[in-house]
Image 1 (cartoon, rainbow, N blue to C red):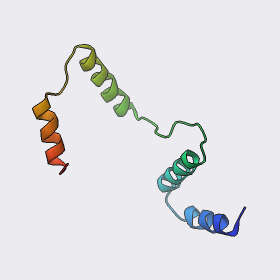
Image 2: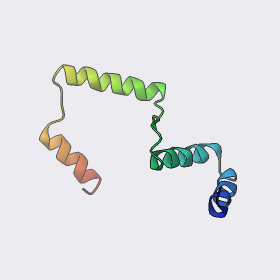
Image 3: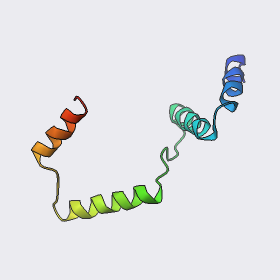
Image 4: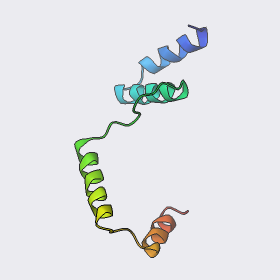
Length: 75
Protein backbone atom coordinates (compact mmCIF):
# COMPACT_ATOMS: atom_id res chain seq x y z
CA UNK A 1 0.00 0.00 0.00
CA UNK A 2 1.35 3.43 -0.85
CA UNK A 3 1.80 6.11 1.78
CA UNK A 4 -0.87 8.26 0.16
CA UNK A 5 -3.41 5.44 0.11
CA UNK A 6 -2.59 4.61 3.72
CA UNK A 7 -3.19 8.28 4.66
CA UNK A 8 -6.50 8.27 2.79
CA UNK A 9 -7.66 5.23 4.75
CA UNK A 10 -6.65 6.89 8.02
CA UNK A 11 -8.79 9.90 7.13
CA UNK A 12 -11.68 7.72 5.93
CA UNK A 13 -11.73 5.81 9.22
CA UNK A 14 -12.73 9.04 10.96
CA UNK A 15 -15.84 9.45 8.80
CA UNK A 16 -19.30 8.17 9.73
CA UNK A 17 -20.03 4.63 8.53
CA UNK A 18 -22.39 5.78 5.77
CA UNK A 19 -19.73 8.06 4.27
CA UNK A 20 -17.14 5.29 4.53
CA UNK A 21 -19.46 2.98 2.58
CA UNK A 22 -19.96 5.60 -0.12
CA UNK A 23 -16.20 6.03 -0.48
CA UNK A 24 -15.80 2.28 -0.85
CA UNK A 25 -18.49 2.20 -3.57
CA UNK A 26 -16.67 4.94 -5.49
CA UNK A 27 -13.31 3.22 -5.08
CA UNK A 28 -14.72 -0.12 -6.24
CA UNK A 29 -16.35 1.56 -9.23
CA UNK A 30 -13.09 3.28 -10.16
CA UNK A 31 -11.15 0.03 -9.95
CA UNK A 32 -13.65 -1.77 -12.17
CA UNK A 33 -14.84 -4.13 -9.48
CA UNK A 34 -18.19 -5.45 -10.68
CA UNK A 35 -20.53 -4.95 -7.76
CA UNK A 36 -23.90 -3.30 -7.38
CA UNK A 37 -23.19 0.28 -6.33
CA UNK A 38 -26.61 1.14 -5.03
CA UNK A 39 -28.54 -0.74 -2.39
CA UNK A 40 -32.27 -0.19 -2.74
CA UNK A 41 -34.37 0.22 0.37
CA UNK A 42 -37.80 -1.40 0.61
CA UNK A 43 -39.32 2.01 -0.18
CA UNK A 44 -37.06 2.33 -3.25
CA UNK A 45 -38.11 -1.12 -4.45
CA UNK A 46 -41.80 -0.32 -3.96
CA UNK A 47 -41.39 2.92 -5.93
CA UNK A 48 -39.58 1.10 -8.72
CA UNK A 49 -42.27 -1.59 -8.89
CA UNK A 50 -44.97 1.09 -9.10
CA UNK A 51 -43.06 2.84 -11.88
CA UNK A 52 -42.78 -0.40 -13.82
CA UNK A 53 -46.53 -1.04 -13.39
CA UNK A 54 -47.29 2.43 -14.73
CA UNK A 55 -44.95 1.87 -17.69
CA UNK A 56 -46.64 -1.47 -18.45
CA UNK A 57 -49.96 0.42 -18.51
CA UNK A 58 -48.51 3.00 -20.91
CA UNK A 59 -48.69 5.74 -18.30
CA UNK A 60 -45.79 8.09 -18.94
CA UNK A 61 -45.15 11.74 -18.14
CA UNK A 62 -46.26 14.17 -20.81
CA UNK A 63 -43.75 16.39 -22.57
CA UNK A 64 -45.08 19.35 -20.56
CA UNK A 65 -44.57 17.48 -17.27
CA UNK A 66 -41.00 16.64 -18.24
CA UNK A 67 -40.28 20.26 -19.20
CA UNK A 68 -41.69 21.41 -15.85
CA UNK A 69 -39.39 19.02 -13.98
CA UNK A 70 -36.35 20.22 -15.93
CA UNK A 71 -37.32 23.85 -15.33
CA UNK A 72 -37.83 23.22 -11.61
CA UNK A 73 -34.20 22.12 -11.38
CA UNK A 74 -32.87 24.89 -13.63
CA UNK A 75 -32.09 22.61 -16.55
